[in-house]
Length: 125
Ligand SMILES: [Ca+2]
Image (cartoon, rainbow, N blue to C red; front, side):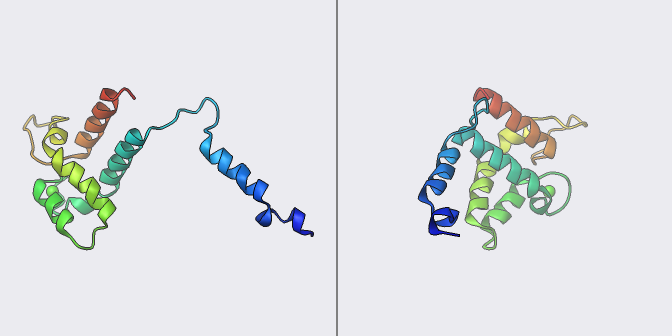
């Protein structure tokens, strides 16, 4: 095998990959940074739901968000998501009315679903 055929040392080969990274395939919808960020927060909230809902009542309450935010073991990136949830807690909790009709202060999974759907539609996605 000569040096010329060694793809690891072939700059052109590597440049090809960079080009592909920057150009989305035709017809594929480009996800904006804002949309991506919202999707990340939603995914985080879903994935971390059981961890955040420390008393296991199916709702993430403000106290639980604050406790997670102050936990030194929680990574900064997660804290930025938690901060978003804290800042928008009222609006998220009000996004869906749970079965009983009694409005809860905490965030349920249904609230998350409804809220993020609402936000994305508001942004025109
Ligand atoms: Ca809870």
